[in-house]
Length: 149
Image (cartoon, rainbow, N blue to C red; front, side):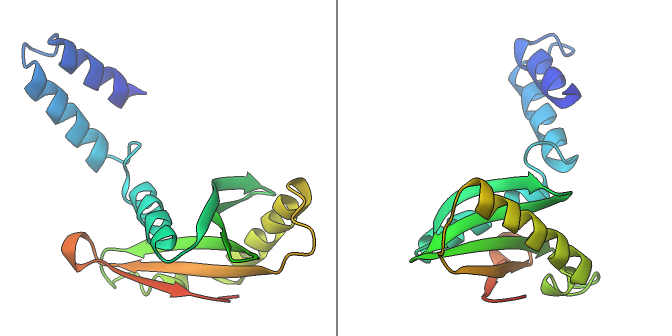
């Protein structure tokens, strides 16, 4: 909220008389500081766009249940696909797909059961995919790992 307030004040010109420049600086701070356009959220948005480009239909984003969050829920044909998005700028922390350990898989499965019951997916087949995003900017690479777990 502070970032929004700072951006609004700067846009109004009360941030030291900077006007539009103050607004630009405030938005840059939000971008760098994990505001609404943090690296993770941007990666999820890019993954959703990539999936749509590949023929998926995105049904939900950031579904929360049972102490877990499913980044994307999509349909590919008649299959309900629960998607975990993992992004890494570099490979110091390991590959994006390696970050989806057994505990995370268990929590996602539990949340997927709740989603299926709540939205009555019926007898449709389900699948768990991971969208692994490596790099940033122009060097960004997407990999869809189907049936990841």
